[in-house]
Image (cartoon, rainbow, N blue to C red; front, side, top):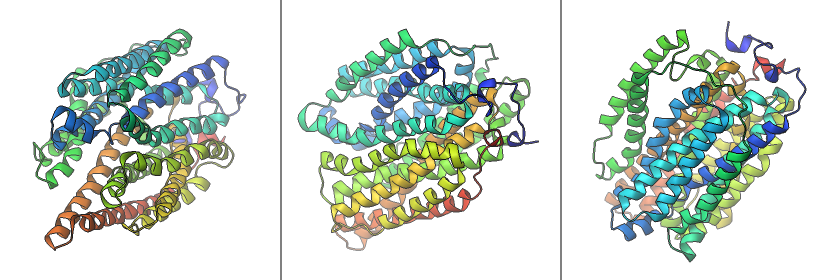
Length: 489
């Protein structure tokens, strides 16, 4: 029998659909603090994109070296997130929050004071170590303590954070760089992070009961090799097309894939005795598997678009970094504004009536992006990006809620860790695909006699065409999404 077909109302009363749809005040407080902390951390992920040229000048490093500020962050996330299922099971909510927020705050302070470039990269690694734990902690808290009837609207609040923080990151960074030095990117975030740590450390109470679970060092080593190798390989594909990759991408990709195969085999064996580092039993749920698959396609298209649009706006249309951030801001705000309404609709009608039109809107928006050119009105660019954000807004909350809602309550932390880990892989894969297609087509255009701007415009066009193809695949999968049995009861 699948997880979707099983109902166990005695296992965890708070997730029984017949329970009173109210959230305890203590749980509301914890979720509120976690939302603020997650917003600050996710904002930090996107602030570096427009700052790289300034940092290349400041530290006299090449673009390939400067990109390690992003690559190191992604690598750390990919290595730490798979361990969060174990962390959230072994330790209490309060101790995990303090450790994660404290680590992030320390990394932010180190970044603001970094005297040389290697120290700045180390600071990004420290930041990522805290960030990797916070989102799974937030997801697991919501799924464990929020009644089924209110999960959609609560997950909608998480979608606001996920949407608005990345959207405001480039705008925030552009404003800082236009008026202050690059260190103020971190100095401005530092007091907010410190306040969240102090307030959260005093107000967040232990709302979970830690239990001792086995610790398997080999699984951690395999996980780090697998996910680290795959993320590094994917992120270096773009560099290899320009002859800048230090290691051929095929090497870390093959090593990562081999380690992932062994890792999965070991987890399947260990989970029989509840000793797995990353329990894979959530995949027994068809709803979870389909939801995660849809999330991977959507996140791949989203990350690819987020990396290409700024390149197009600055290199083809000639916008400044601040102007680029302002153009992208309405889309992110749109996604954030509709998230609460999408969450309420999910509680009423389930995922499919939202996911099907959402995937169609995403495919339409990406298809429209293939029509962009250097002469396109700025209003057209904003409108297409808002349309994409609208479609993603219809997808994110229903997919996350239905996928995690189909998992057994005792496996929530593992389901959340799986989803967040695969999102990192999807982001790396989407970025690699879009950048590779763009770089290849751009190089071919230059060889054919096109000027650099026209060649890059053609490369962006081809990349968005591939993104449209991915989105069409997502449309087909959207008809397989359904409400979890437990939520439908």
